[in-house]
Amino acid sequence: MVREHQDEYASQWAAIESIAGKFGCAPQTLCNWVRQAERDAGERAGLTTEERARLKALERENRELRQANEILRKASAYFAQAELDRRFKS
Image (cartoon, rainbow, N blue to C red):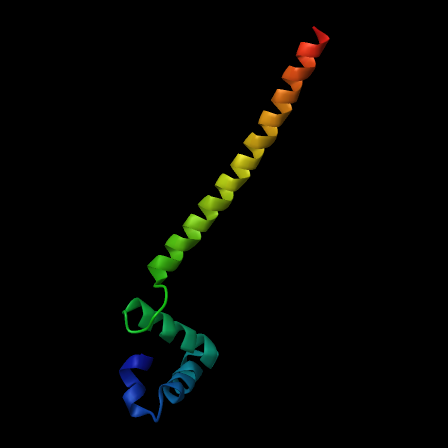
């Protein structure tokens, strides 16, 4: 809506302020939405909504893999120590 009607205003920010009041949201919130829509349309540099979602999923997967590796490292150390203790007792 901002992009459709911004020609009717002195600036994009003026359009955002006017339209934000009609939607009942803060102008900065609407500005953020407009900027993201511009990125999604390829009109502005930055990550698209799809790329952001993919990045978030990859970061979550990376975090989970790091946790799993830490658990495996600790389990390996525990069982290695148990094996050493068993050999000395025998």
